[in-house]
Image 1 (cartoon, rainbow, N blue to C red):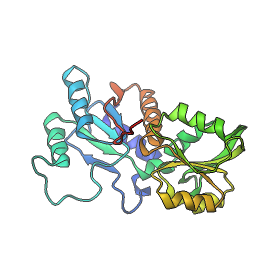
Image 2: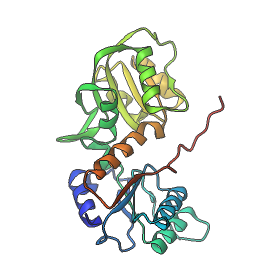
Image 3: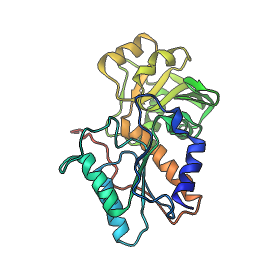
Image 4: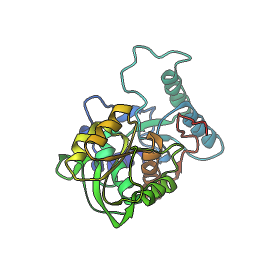
Length: 267
């Protein structure tokens, strides 16, 4: 499959026009690879480490010519591209090594089998629907039922086992033996959706990047807020996307080994 055909297929599924106004989905760097057979390295965030990985794989004989990322390389248009600047260096290496960079962000968050659905599927949630609908068949986050229901302790253990976050944070004074049936999930920064989650009747909300007062807000709304970290809640969607790409029998598909959580915790 040519890169142009892969991107055409993807954009029919998760159209970049669905992105938020502040977002920058689609091609970040296209150095002339559209008509080449697709060799894809999938990652969460396009960093210099991921680019070096792509170059290493290519030099080792793997036909990598596309970094397919969830997060955009460029959010705000840069005023200049210079040596020593991370974005400038990514662009320079992309053209030298003929490796494109494409991002699917808030458009991928909304679709079926996107970032939120993958979390819901990992937790085996049933009767799933969006926290907020954006248009028919699309929406942010997912709400659904656990079947069977779990105690909060069992649910937290399941989240820790499946997502492997370095630090799992949850609301204080929670009864760990309480039964949980209805759960909401949203990968990445989802604290702004707390008011919408409260209207769904979900007892637990799994997301990330939550601040001190957002835990207070969720407690006041009767929600147990669970913060598993940005990387842990979105990396599974990258894994699922790599598996989906592999079904197309591309010349090369690989999930990045250099993708990283940019935080460390002292145990």
